[in-house]
Amino acid sequence: MNILSFLNLLRMIYGGKKPDIVKIQKMGLLAVKIAQVHALRIDFLSEATCLELSKLYRANIPIKTEDALKNLNRAPFSSIDEKPIATASVGQVYRAKLVSGEDVVIKVIKADFKRKFEKDVAALKRLFKFVIFFYPKLAKVFDPIGIIEHIEEYTLKELNLNNEIEGHDLLYSLYEKNKRLYDLSNLKFPRIYRELSSETVMVSEYIPGKTFDEILDRDMDYSRLLLLFKIHGFFMFNIGTFHGDIHPGNLMYHDEKIYFIDTGAIGRVSPRLSSGLLNFFDALSVYDYERCALRLNEMAETGIAGRAFDRFADKFKRLYSDFRGKSVGEVSLTKKMMETIKLGVHSGMSFEKGMFSIIKSLMFLDGMVLRCNPQARLMEDMRQFIAEFRGAVHTGS
Ligand SMILES: Nc1ncnc2c1ncn2[C@@H]1O[C@H](COP(=O)(O)OP(=O)(O)O)[C@@H](O)[C@H]1O
Ligand SMILES: [Mg+2]
Image 1 (cartoon, rainbow, N blue to C red):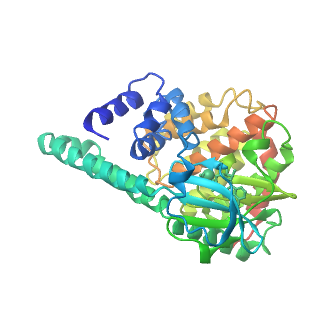
Image 2 (cartoon, helix red, strand yellow):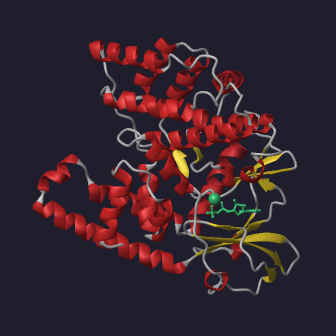
Image 3 (cartoon, rainbow, N blue to C red):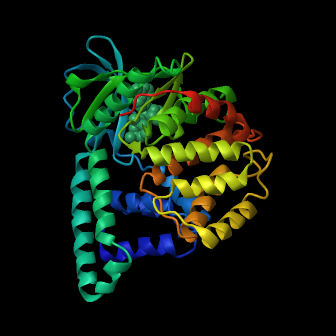
């Protein structure tokens, strides 16, 4: 990515017009990652821009199979499908059979991606250093090098499949530790073939079911989605360590079980934030907005007090004046949550970084309900789980 395409990217994100997500993908992985980060920044971007950018969590341009499988050792496999099941922002997934007869999937990272990404990161850092040399004030307002280093760190993590295995092991161990304390009987994980996996290849058990993405619009029972809330909510609200990328392509359903796949990103929040959120939703599920406002303020790393809080609480009530009894189709929970955080930030609160993985989760969950059962009154259906979460004991990470 050169200076021109970087400026073009900024113009698309900040320009106020609908960003062109195909163009962004063509700019490469770094551009996609920068755009994805901005998809969550409702605190300074418009909601329409955020929603368009959030499509970049899924959309991807495929790569040729011969390129994708160029460096794969084919010896352990008796067959590998020619057509990939899916394309990721960092690689591709194929169905295959092991010589021993088991059905598996192979996920491969495209090696060239890493080189280009590293080159782009280095170029962008040089650009920022240059700009900051002439405009030192800029570094005081925002920290572009810090942001790039953050993107660099987690993308390099994603480009190393050992991290996905580590994420899988972490979530699995939390499941093992907690399954006797809380009902997690509908959660499963595919087996990973560690001896066949490496930084660039991951082989795992083939799940003969469908992804949530494939069934959401047709044969998804709303009760199954509620089951997902029950499971993912326990990780988010009680443990505070959770699947950090819970979109419908990363969830599979088979034989009454929900499978967590693609575990490269793990969300982590402090006990204050996770229990604060639970208290917030507890109040929201009974439409007690005064208590909601207090709970949100308690969740913040820096809270507000006195007149500032009163003004915030008033605005909060106004924001939620159309919320009571509405279905997800009528009032979007994602939009409300984004506006809530925006209001909090503009009123002087600040939240820990983990807040963004929570927003991302809620955005995905709400989006799934919207596709499956737009008539649902999600907040009211959540009440039973909130009571369960409150009563549940857990073993943390
Ligand atoms: N174990 C599996 N069994 C069956 N299909 C799978 C499995 N793992 C992945 N897939 C399919 O491949 C897609 C992409 O896999 P995923 O691990 O999410 O990689 P990505 O990083 O590309 O998102 C999934 O949405 C699903 O359709
Ligand atoms: Mg995925």
